[in-house]
Image (cartoon, rainbow, N blue to C red; front, top):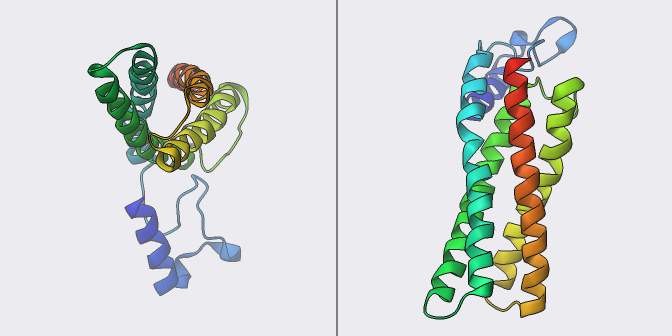
Length: 173
């Protein structure tokens, strides 16, 4: 992300870096004049995507155990679920931004990339939504409301896992 900001900054300082016709983005989707290698973004994407997948699944498991568990561990499991969700949501931002850079800013794509994005976008939206809900509600959720939260968290964890599967399939394509 820093490199993209640097590239945009270079363009603002020196507009002659833009290509013919004034386009600001290269064929690979990177700002012209930055000489960014797609491998950088591919490595960042590959390394960063494991965190939101694992942290979403862990968050769901911690919260599910807290939901059915008893004191004295219930509170600690809720806290673990809360923080793993927040860390996963932050890591999700890195994964999505680097993935967009790798795919030349294609939000949907074709073939396996389309399958990957069919799972990524709902998972991303739900994970960010769950994190915001947890930040707003904190410990004030009723038991039925938290039960609904757990169902949505389970769906989100499944979507994240499916997105990871199809992302891995892209490596073989």
